[in-house]
Length: 215
Image (cartoon, rainbow, N blue to C red; front, side, top):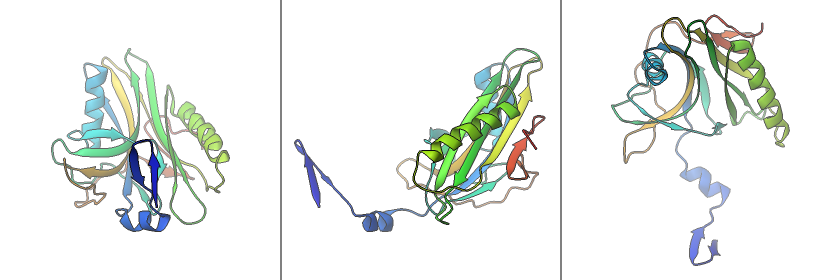
């Protein structure tokens, strides 16, 4: 069917056609990092490099998890990234600029109970991991209540940092997929990276850093 609006024509695809034309759903990697540098911008870059995505151009998404996606925690993002590649992601970045100040950031997510894997992310920043955790749960409660689907438990990944003599950035990032310019996206993780995960799963809530949120 073709729908015409004004002088332009747009093809309207059935759900079946849309599904068959879609690429494979991404393997989403969630990780946390802390960066310290002379400025807030440089601290953000340091956190990105620590997480393994410092050489990518970030394309920030609006937090919807596509069907059939998988979510896994990681110490460093394992997706192949060539200098300048696009990285489709959801992230939260909190900053503390003065000595003694604290910053926290976090992501929370929930998926539908029908087994489709579809769901929602939400990102928040604050002064403490507990504050961020509360904001995440409050946001997702309203976001899921306004939709007809049924959703499972909320999981969170938070990180908290304290500035010493230089600005600090607390970063949590969900990496969906990477792509070069003119290429299709890929969510494939080729090379495993060893190391302790920055996000620790604690009774359904993931946290990192000195502020681990509520038990």
